[in-house]
Each structure stands twice: as C-alpha cells, then as structure tokens.
Length: 287
Image 1 (spheres, helix red, strand yellow):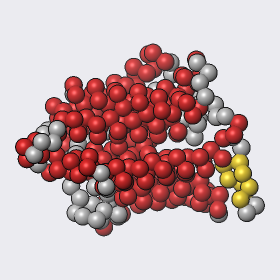
Image 2: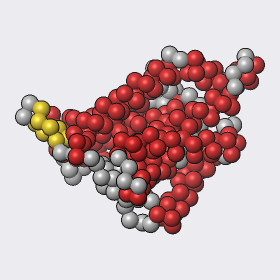
Image 3: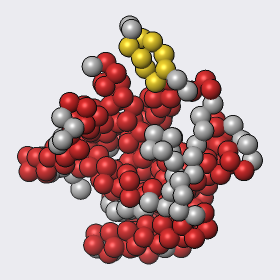
C-alpha cells in the first residue's frame, strides 16, 4: 500500500510539472496552449541526445532540457502565439494542436521513430528500504525536485512583483501598459517558463515511460488536460492537488482493478465537470 501511494505521488508530481505551464497560460493568461506536449518532447530529446552523443551526466542535461524549450517558447510566442491572444478558444485549440501534429513528424524525420533512452546514473537506480517497503530512488528524486518546483512557482506567481504584474496584465493589458508594465515582456517570460517546465517534465518522464519518441506529446496531453480540469486552471496549488489526486488514483486503480483502472481518471474528470466545472480545488469561479 505504501509503495502504491508513493508511486502515485511521484507520478502526480511529474504530471504537475508537465501541466503547470498549461495551468499558468490557461488560468492566468486565458490562452489554451495544447502544444505543451511538444515542448515536453523537446526537453526529453535534449536530455536523451546529450547523454547519448556527448556523454553528459543526467543532472547536467536537466538545465538544458529547461532552457531549450524555454527559448523555443519565447520564439513561438513572439512570432505566432501573440497573434492569437484575442482569438476564440476554438482558434487557439486548433492552432496549438496543429503545432503538436507538425512536431511529431518533424521529430520522426530528423531523429527517427525509435525511442531514445535516458540512462539514469547508478545513484538514481534501484530502490531504498523504508519500513521494509522498497521505494524507488528515482521516484524519490522526482518527488523532491517537483516539490521544490511547486514551492518556487507558488512564490514566484503569488509573492513577487512579477506575479502581480502578470495578473494585472491579464486583467487589463491597456491599463497595465499605462502603468508602465511591459505586457509583451511579461507574457514572453511566462510562456518561456511554462515551456521550460514542460521540457523539464519531459526529461524527467523519459525514463518512466521507456524513452522519448515522436509520439511522446500525445502520451501526456490528455493527462495534462485532466489535471487542469480537476485542479482548476486559476492557481498553481490547484494544479498540484489535482495532479497528486490523479496520480494516486491512476496508480492505485491500475494495481487493484487493472481491468478498468485506466478509466478511473476519466470518470473522475467527468464527475468533476458535472459537479464543479471550475475544478475541485479552484477558489473562484474559474475563467
């Protein structure tokens, strides 16, 4: 039971890092960016290729897995995304899902269809014994890293000047500009952070799902959307609690009732949409 709970928490933490950028852009910026899975794929490939071709240590590749998608996010935000800030949700969905469908064949053409593996160092392999229960070292590492990211994001968005400027820019961009806030810079940084977190999540998830391949964006897209649905889209803590709930339910369901375990999370999502459309952990009415 303890192993299942811990694996569920670790999986939930991983989903949180993958979905946190989507939660920020959707909840704070009112922009539906379904291309997050593509940024996660980029981060996974960065880690896998740096380790495979340059022999870089796993920990050294993680900053690169954040920075490369972050830079890509800034470029796309400056050239493409900003044109859709005032567009309808349907236009945003079609455009960003189109980016995902373009990224997959591009990755297949340049990197091949085979999965690129991420080989963990010895100190992250195997398990530890906790009260007689084996706990995966890598999942313990994921919990620690993702927990630190969750705390940093909460402080960054709620207790800093940047977070206040971001909320002001979203509420009324014209007034924010009049007050001296550089709205374009705020949005670019927000997209960069969200894209970088998706890339970091992809790097951390690569070993969990057996490597990175061109179909990687679709492996987590539905799960990320369910996290935002359950947790609510207007806060980091909601996304965190939603991801933890989803992770525990998914792992426990697949263990105890494998015949229908994979469908439990969809049932929870449907029930949430019926009972509390703004999300279980949302403090407001949602956007």
